[in-house]
Image (cartoon, rainbow, N blue to C red; front, side, top):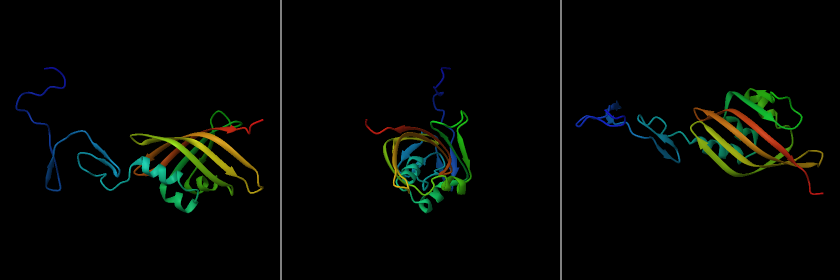
Length: 161
């Protein structure tokens, strides 16, 4: 029998969830997550929405609930070792931003399964009055609607000569 074909009259397996029979099919993407066979993610926001919320604020109090307790942040920028600069744990992660003001411009977010990739520019205003801009690509890995790992790749933008 050719792959992908069913015998005539055969029905796909079904699952009963809360007294309702559901037949397998491709999951449907919605603005609130994926509705699959059991519909268990109906109320969970999409991973892309979690990252959008994270990137739209620099407020630590607002970012904290979006992070897993054992979150890991690895940065690859000029001057760090090949293994990257690693920060582990929610408190250390939030403190890694220091006291500088941060504003991000994100022009693309791409989501696939539990991974969201953000591309943009971060503008940092330092407490001493200095400023810098970094072009970045951040790769977010999420687990149960929380950011579990962030891999950051950045390049310092030099002011025009």
